[in-house]
Length: 263
Image 1 (cartoon, one colour):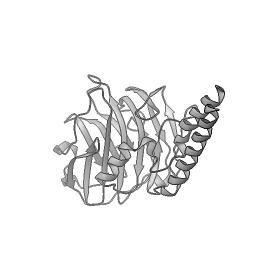
Image 2 (cartoon, rainbow, N blue to C red):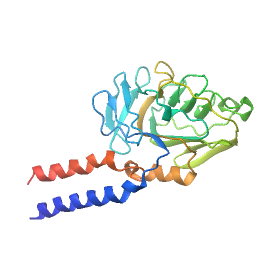
Image 3 (cartoon, rainbow, N blue to C red):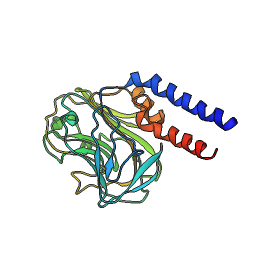
Image 4 (cartoon, rainbow, N blue to C red):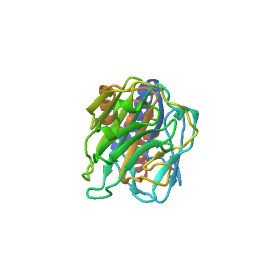
């Protein structure tokens, strides 16, 4: 009797959760990889744009900050998101992800998110950037006198073997870098970005260089600049339910199946 009540409670809770949040989908999100519902070499994008990724190399599925994550080896592993027009950012952008870099690991550049190489339309969030050994955000098209990472405009050094939420944004006038929901640095940078037809890569540049060594989870891309409060909300929200709960309901259903099978 108690198990039956629990089953119906879980069903009711899932129903309320999905209906309460389904109207809160943020249409500015163009990529959201949770690594919880992947199929073979396909990484499912649960954003409204469905920009599914392709696993390159042989990363391991491990426990993440929420659900599952991927462990990248720093030499061959990454995720490619094939080009889609929704991934071109011309006026604003926010890049977010959870990372856990290997302490004492690679000492060269480690790309978190990057579209194209160093060419028109490129945007990037580096989990570890040399020189400086810290977080960095770069855009090929923005004026050099903005003061990019080579000028010392960096975030924090997070290569400590711990989970960190990192984010970088540009609102058309300034670039901002965040660590664990807090602003590290913000500096003026006006301009516009070009378009290109290159893939977005998670954990490498163009799939053949600047590989990340460590764990990655909860990767998001927006076509607008999020506020510090919004970035902190993303960081603290389980599985991003404030965006869409659909991709995370498998956790609830997994629990439900377990209860039913044990009756």
